[in-house]
Length: 368
Image (cartoon, rainbow, N blue to C red; front, side, top):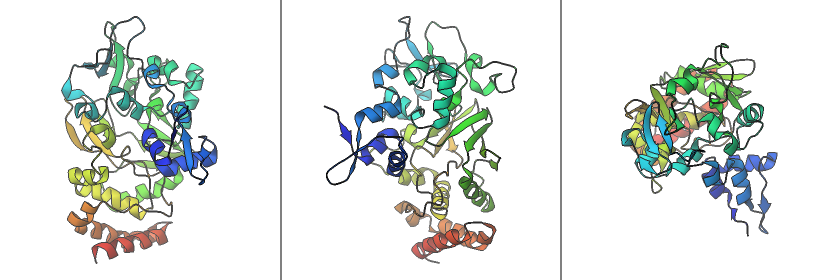
């Protein structure tokens, strides 16, 4: 008998918001049923379809020839997937290091083809299939977000042989061979693709541009660089072979009992508060804990800083998410200064009335 999930349960499994599930249902991206009380329920088969897996089958833990499969961080062996053996604790994904996720659960947070239009299109073009099981070996689970990849234990291949950061495909001197399509492991539902190792195109996502402009105007240096193009918004990659992104969800710093947004304020202080203030001002109500986090050193595993602000694709939604309680309690001056500055600069923005309304709301909460 098939299992059914509520919207909130499905959203947690798929690492999206409940709002996204509703939008997918309305657009036909996901099939739901209705209860006698007219509540949506999502069949387990739909969740498996969107994640492209039955888990064990999709994330094969043994190489084809029977040798062990190894999770690598650049050229360091990190985890023997086949034997479930830690080989480098310092370089483990944070959630595995802190034991908030196992390998399979962590892998699912990196996989996006079930919802990412560009990823599905690239899979079909390159492999003739959008089934993760059929492409995972060819892609080696590479991503431009981090430096993790898979190899057989007895395989003679290095990170420089396969990394998309330096792949000749980008400059036109090399042919596409599969492994360098890092777009296959870009989180989220928006239609996006890497144009090269430095530039991510978010197709027709123009509403995101003003939130970035607001960050720049307010002098928030911890912001990804965004530019407009004829096709959409171009974001400059802020990761490299030496520094990679690890989301709050993947980090293991926030456990089930924690509020991830409060944990971000606790760790990053004013930087996290500023991000949540911007989200409130631009009515961005989809700041889930998979789209903010850390920059890590890929050579040592050290946590360096909060990652630059990115991903404002649900802005101007006419809805807001209250700031975490510890933002108001410990950082009211930061909130007040950002709101006052926004009011003074609001005439420069198309969404002036929204910015004024939301800034005044926050000022009423913290006191002028």
